Image 1 (cartoon, rainbow, N blue to C red):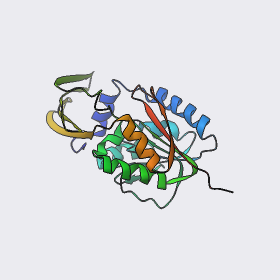
Image 2 (image 1 turned 120 degrees about the vertical axis):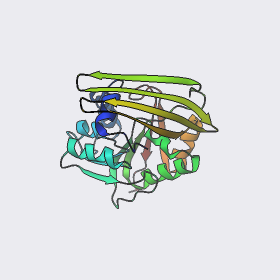
Image 3 (image 1 turned 30 degrees about the vertical axis):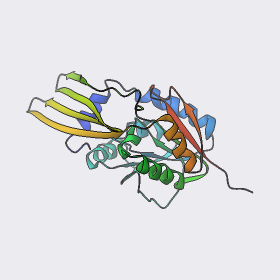
Image 4 (image 1 turned 120 degrees about the horizontal axis):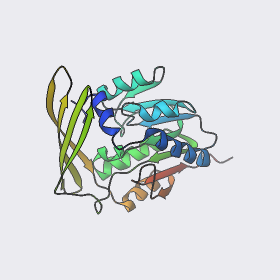
Length: 238
């Protein structure tokens, strides 16, 4: 996952369809409503740190990701922020947070229902009592598209990118075979990456949160139209 894609190329491509300031404004509104006293926030699958760049103004933030390349970019973008290279299903930071977020459908990289259960349970174990976890899901099996070819283009003076991918499914795994053509004044590179992500139903997400001991609410719109699950960890009894 993102073994060949640089942080610069990743950011340029996702600027085509993501509005990080607007998303973070919506997220802050959610946190003000559901966790008004929250201070410590962990961004799981933080990528290049675009959300943390915004959220660090209000919270004491940390980031976690599997990709060394994404984390290199994140550290440059957010100096002074603590980052961890780890797997979302198995990380152990030996501390708890008021808020854990896992955005932009990154949760689906766990691929299987059993690993989804482990991951959300791991989130819950890293939450303070009264804390919340916010997860943006990937598409459900019913909404996922197959048999398409998709193309995205970046056309900047010093950077040209073509990103094309095909979409198919094998059981409950979505497979995106991606081709990248990246041009700079120095060179033109072509490389491929294969992304495999789990297709989970709404009922499965609800079951996984409840199984982890979290009260769960669902927002069908979310931050960017993909929906959003909010899990609440109960306060310790007095």
